[in-house]
Length: 126
Image (cartoon, rainbow, N blue to C red; front, side):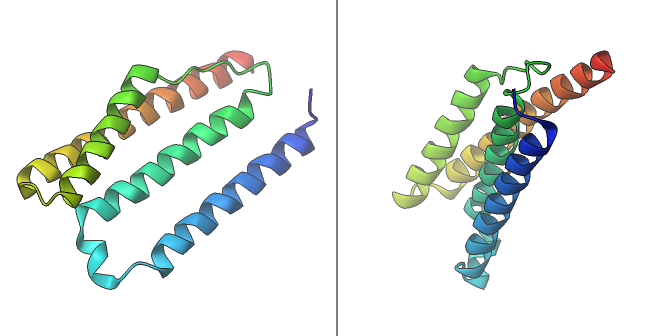
């Protein structure tokens, strides 16, 4: 079992990598692209991956055993891929926006479920 310093080190490294990834997205994206709903989806997906990575790093500590809702995550992933496909195929913009909003909403609900589980376990452990 890793010590708290080792676990904290991996958390800091992962947070730094994700901040670097967000910085790359911001640096290499044109100004007009930030008005696109697809850019919001990319940022939401990066944030959700950060939450899943934090959950994975906490999994090493046996006190925490929160499981992400896999069907909800799969639905969000399919909605995000569908939105990307609809954008690339130049489908109806209304369909694309509904898929993007659905993916962001699903990622948000799944993230809230995970965070609620982490908070609940933290209060029972203390």
